[in-house]
Length: 107
Image (cartoon, rainbow, N blue to C red; front, side):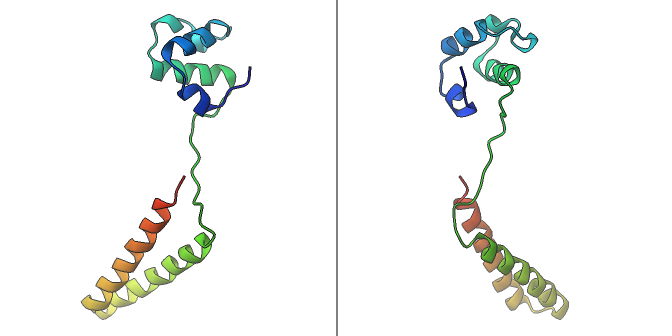
């Protein structure tokens, strides 16, 4: 029986307890008393499953956006040094827009 974290997360507490009953590991001791959240972590620990959900951006221009953000951060520092509030506001707005674009595309 090979499970992924997402498969286990989609199961009910009763199904998780049934799986835990077949596992001989100290992490699942007392599985009948555990709620779903704790039972899920215990089963993953016993089976050696990574519980961390890995995210990645599904956009091809990710590196281009990150390099543009890096350039904008330099321009932001220049605007701060020059005390140009209008330019600073535009640059910060663009940085905010690009970071949100990356975050929205995270899966």
